Picture (cartoon, rainbow, N blue to C red):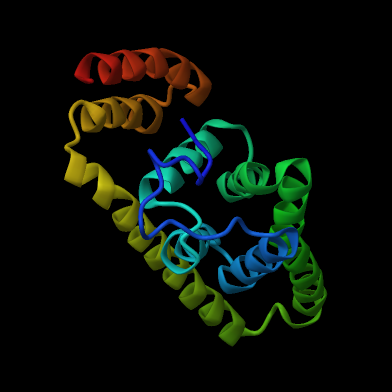
Length: 194
């Protein structure tokens, strides 16, 4: 469960910082969106956990888990969850505007330029390189997010994840049905483990 940073049970020495103001939320997510063009989540984690220490790694993983479960883009959902946690509805709106505002402008300009220069071969090679870099960032973020889980011990989590992968990736079962089936099993296994 996500708790406020002021709760002494969850606050660590590293995580004790002032709550971000609305301008801090906005400009932090502007920085994330400008840094993470094509993959903002690794940059969001780096900013929130490593640099600003607004959340611990475990708190980030919990908030991100909620964002993944909600429909829509994970990083967009995460910005709303994070902004709401620290600033209520205005915080959610400001974080979302900071995350989506710059990319909308950039993509509009790039789209107009691509309409004129899209047939150039060098442009295709540049875009391939950018996609490779984005894939590397995602792999690095997964490794950082998984580290706290490995320290605590995984228990049944890898088996539930493998069942989900096989069901959706290989058997092509609908994701909502797999989630509905695996969520209660996962919760029950976690409850038994505690």
